Image 1 (cartoon, rainbow, N blue to C red):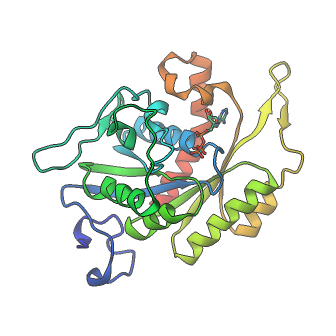
Image 2 (image 1 turned 30 degrees about the vertical axis):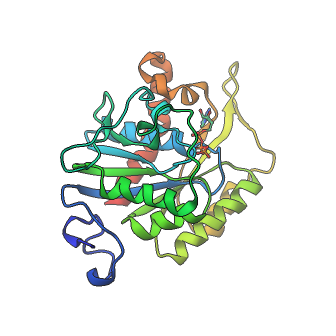
Length: 278
Ligand SMILES: Nc1ncnc2c1ncn2[C@@H]1O[C@H](COP(=O)(O)OP(=O)(O)OP(=O)(O)O)[C@@H](O)[C@H]1O
């Protein structure tokens, strides 16, 4: 049953506790829940989730990542935790896997034999698994929990939005008309559900010429300004396509230049996010 005392939305959601469908674990005290969503697959949602989580942790916040993409989980690999398994405690709860920076993570891949074993489950079972990642995982005290959403606006995305106290959503998109159209559907769904869209990240928007440094737009029909204005949302940032981001799992092995590049790209976004979340 719902428990407002441990709910991140306490005092701001307007729901009645007796009819609220969100169940909270009394051991967990999570201040903010941020879903990272894309509408369209492959645009960099999981990469952005990891970059933001690492940046938050580097600022001294306590951070968690829930990998809600049950049939296509990528958080363990992106965090270089793919060899880890999750264990339970005496209360039948699940302990998250914690990375070298103290980021707590949970993914279905920690619970199955091998990372390439497929999860062949229908929507309601997948939805229940995600709900258990909220109710049964010992997240403890967190300043922010990022949820790496499955792509699209299907059954599981709806379950998450209805069953977890999501404070806001970050949309990840690429500047292509077809992607913007599908991301717009997701934004409209969130507006109908009264869930705030915190802003959009335009990922893989351009490349920098390796010789002269000139910014080269990859897509000829780049209409980011219109997309932002039509949807009345904030642009949190535009990121280029760079090898450093595709190698984020090896962050400690990246050159000092690449580490600085990532910092310079992600910090303005995270600074805006800290501001809009407070
Ligand atoms: N800015 C970037 N520069 C270079 N490569 C990137 C960038 N962003 C993401 N990628 C790469 O693009 C691919 C897709 O990224 P990612 O898995 O984060 O997308 P996704 O939207 O979460 O995908 P899915 O829909 O499967 O969940 C990965 O190989 C990732 O390394």
